[in-house]
Length: 491
Image (cartoon, rainbow, N blue to C red):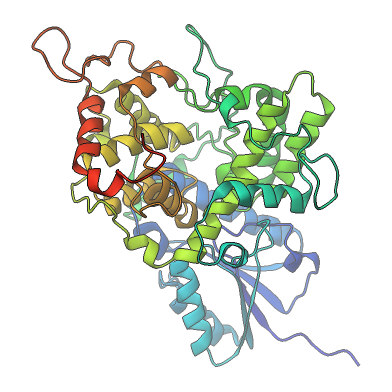
């Protein structure tokens, strides 16, 4: 005798677009998947217009793919009359109207949504269930179990991950050593760009999104940044992100590590993969990204040096998983940390790029134009300035969460409030990541043509005024001497 499946409602959030999930291996007519566009999500922060467009398009394409595979799908657009704009209320309404007897969801990656759904599940009068997203290499609590109350240090965590998953190792033995005998090639990944350098063209997947842009404006969604509605360049499907992955492995990986920290006014993409939105929305997995990149290295080690692939693997297998571990070990308290008690507001030029500081102008302009900048632009330009200037971490968090297409709180806040702003007092980083103009000049072409003098520490009334980064740098250490003078990494 066959037992009928309970009529089940399964929720898929906008960053849970994992078509490889075990949920989708079987088509069950008793199971309905629901995706929702909600003001709850568009309005909790002011997002970049390209970020909103990317998420909505990715969700719509994903829903269509599920339908084509035979699954039952309910999709609530932002303007649907039945959309309450609240996640719990929408779920309650669907259960009541369609008579579901079971509700299931995937573990959210954001604390606020995890809390909201856990509270909802406790109150529903029907059976509920929760499943893993089957995306990350680690489980939520693996990190806390690994470190306990000790300091969270990325390097031993990264080495453990390499051993556990047999990535770039000499063998699959649990005690194996790295393939080259050296774990970390970070020292080889800090080159500036040669003079006159012209980077490779950015991989694009252009499409006309003028209809959704106009519709969002009609709906009154407040956004930041700019968009070319007739040539939106970001991928929004799994197929497109697999193409981006192949393009990176075949055409960019060979120079990724060498120039991963480099910056230039005319270059916004360089040798970076730009896969972060695809991974953070779960259209592609970190495992398939790493497997593809490592395979490219082993297939052509003469062209792709080990330092290139190790630097890339460290960012995903090490840093990405590490930051997620910190997030779940330290939230919600982490979101309120302010080690230096900074109180200033973020200056206007983070929204309009209208500043004479060339580095800030270009880094912000890239962010507003592309909803993207790479990690060193975020850390050592916009983040560095905000830390030196004493900007409140809440202000910095809100800007980074909104402006970048790949920004979801679990990965944004740990990088921003943690590494970039040192507001956590050393949980993520062992020292504040600050610099004067000397570092910016070494790693970028921004100082050329700037109205400020990178070499001057103070204004002398002659020629160009001194670069603000220099005076801010020394002021930062002077005003925070008591908190930092015993840090062994600061000399």
